[in-house]
Image (cartoon, rainbow, N blue to C red; front, side, top):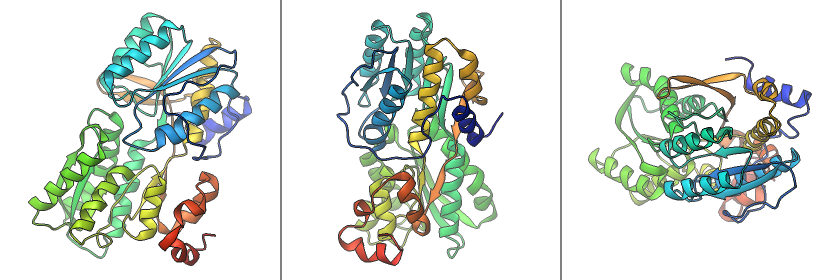
Length: 371
């Protein structure tokens, strides 16, 4: 696998390619579809997947990528596909016609991403898969987080939260099957919980993936599974904070919220508040600023035609099970967040205490030492 993510960041800093790696996940909210003003440097196209499934894409990734690319002397052109594969393809065609020198994509689906990569490849435009690997595609590089580790952290946290419920029944609510990340997260979850299910420590009541990471659909799916299980559930393995929120809404309807641990991912403000309220047991923090900074460093190297510098950054390898190849990668480490360590990430993540401690949560925050 090459060097560790920490070593990769240190290497990038040492050669002057990575200017910021502080794990900051907070910037002013942008217009989700607005393109960044030019800097006069090489043009880099960025296509993000949507604004509905997670707050991260518009609130965190877009402004952080814009800032990181500008620091590298590049001209970012950023647009959002709003979950529409056809719109994603149209945006990509427009960017390629503008002769962007590098394309950075987080596609609504792997198939949509792979199709765009074929077009870019024919035009000699290097592509970086951002956050999501497009299996069967031809991207030159991949920057993301260790999503199997994300799944392991979620599963381990759920098992810990259910330690006083031997044989407790678990319902699993996963992300979109068209997103390889959801598959990787599930692999990590299964590696951790599979042996516990086999040993009878916990019982898998049901497991379902949710198309498009659709939160409303996730709530409906969970309610159906809960009803089919006679209204019983002792723990919910939810793949991200949005799905966790939908699950919690259903649990509130049945008077179970707070009694049933629920996992999450993305460390959203809503997720953190749900943890403080006692409705969600954990989330997973992924420092998007680091992800954006490494991606910008790769883009700058590729825009210069310096593949040696790009390869020096991306020394890990990620298997593409469809394409039968290994993609040069940077996989950053995630961090589990629970009630006990929320305070520790408020500074580095720059989520302000007042965002999560308002109203009825003020006394809870004081008890936890959150000012």
